Amino acid sequence: MGPNEYPRWRWHAQCVRYSLAYVSAAFLVSVPLRLILKESEGFITFSLVYGVVAGIAALLFTPIGQIDWKHMTVPRFKVFELEVARNATLVSGVLLAGRLISSRYFPPLELGSVVFMLMAFSYLKAKAHRIIFKEFYSAEAKPPQPGSGCAPG
Image 1 (tube, rainbow, N blue to C red):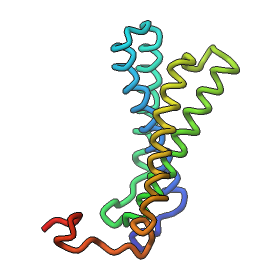
Image 2: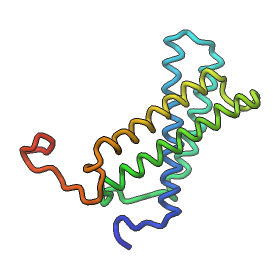
Image 3: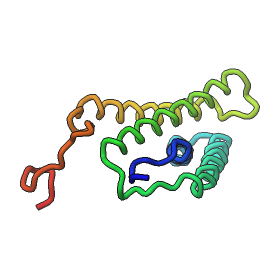
């Protein structure tokens, strides 16, 4: 099996792991935002609980989602990054939609919208990079030459 020929389930497990880590980070990043805005402690509690739960879930995927990153090519990594950002946006969108349907188990609307926006910006950034820098993300991308401004040396 070549360095980039992992079983599809392992690739998906790694995507789930990183998507959960993205969502966890977004919830945890919202805590200082809420503190700065002097929001109610209920929002902060939800942020911490959801962030920790998503983080633990991400850690549970670690044993089954191991990929040897040193053989990962940049174009393939960027596809992975785009997929992770898309999945995290979908997860946060489901949490936001869940709040609109039922308020019992879902984060407050304001918190859900902040997390959704963080994830949407992450996805849009990855998508924009892929569109703007097509030649960099193609499979035939050549490494920069020394002295070109982007390469060391």
